[in-house]
Length: 82
Image 1 (cartoon, rainbow, N blue to C red):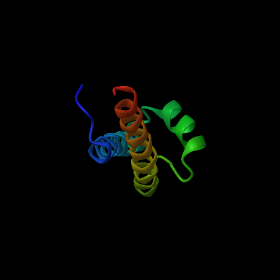
Image 2 (spheres, rainbow, N blue to C red):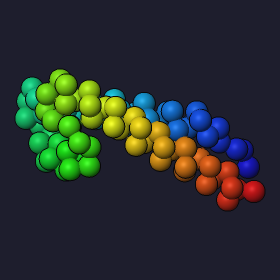
Image 3 (spheres, rainbow, N blue to C red):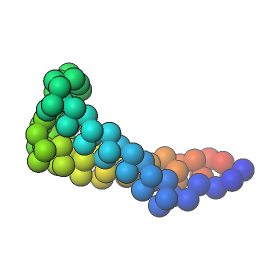
Image 4 (spheres, one colour):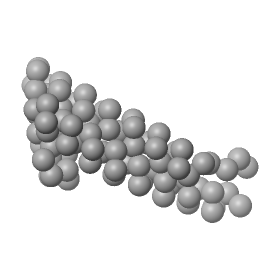
């Protein structure tokens, strides 16, 4: 079995989720689309709101959250794949 690079996988997960959080914040601000998603995520990510600043805050939270989760997932996969 191939091993996953823990740092690269964590970074990739963090980048993807940060982009998703930012885009959803901007979409909610401009069109109102995704308001339920924003309400749910704002309970997890302090400061996440449908504003430009709130979208940036959400992206930062998302990057850290998904980066750690992705690194743990890759580490666990490598341990179990032995």
